[in-house]
Length: 43
Image (cartoon, rainbow, N blue to C red; front, side):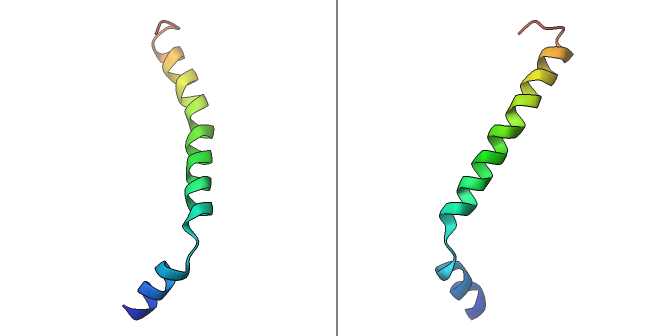
Protein backbone atom coordinates (compact mmCIF):
# COMPACT_ATOMS: atom_id res chain seq x y z
CA UNK A 1 0.00 0.00 0.00
CA UNK A 2 2.95 2.29 0.64
CA UNK A 3 4.06 1.87 -2.98
CA UNK A 4 0.61 2.85 -4.23
CA UNK A 5 0.46 6.01 -2.13
CA UNK A 6 3.97 6.98 -3.23
CA UNK A 7 3.10 6.36 -6.87
CA UNK A 8 -0.12 8.38 -6.68
CA UNK A 9 1.60 11.14 -4.75
CA UNK A 10 4.52 11.41 -7.16
CA UNK A 11 2.59 10.87 -10.40
CA UNK A 12 1.85 13.98 -12.41
CA UNK A 13 -1.83 13.57 -13.19
CA UNK A 14 -2.15 16.51 -15.59
CA UNK A 15 -0.77 14.71 -18.68
CA UNK A 16 -2.96 11.71 -17.90
CA UNK A 17 -6.07 13.89 -17.85
CA UNK A 18 -4.96 15.74 -20.99
CA UNK A 19 -4.43 12.50 -22.90
CA UNK A 20 -7.77 11.18 -21.69
CA UNK A 21 -9.66 14.27 -22.86
CA UNK A 22 -7.81 14.33 -26.20
CA UNK A 23 -8.79 10.68 -26.73
CA UNK A 24 -12.43 11.47 -25.88
CA UNK A 25 -12.45 14.39 -28.30
CA UNK A 26 -10.90 12.28 -31.07
CA UNK A 27 -13.43 9.50 -30.49
CA UNK A 28 -16.42 11.85 -30.43
CA UNK A 29 -16.06 12.71 -34.14
CA UNK A 30 -16.60 9.18 -35.50
CA UNK A 31 -19.32 8.58 -32.89
CA UNK A 32 -21.29 11.60 -34.16
CA UNK A 33 -20.83 10.47 -37.78
CA UNK A 34 -21.96 6.95 -36.87
CA UNK A 35 -25.05 8.30 -35.08
CA UNK A 36 -25.87 10.46 -38.10
CA UNK A 37 -25.57 7.46 -40.42
CA UNK A 38 -27.57 5.21 -38.08
CA UNK A 39 -30.41 7.74 -37.85
CA UNK A 40 -30.46 8.31 -41.61
CA UNK A 41 -28.72 11.68 -41.40
CA UNK A 42 -31.50 13.20 -39.31
CA UNK A 43 -30.53 14.43 -35.85
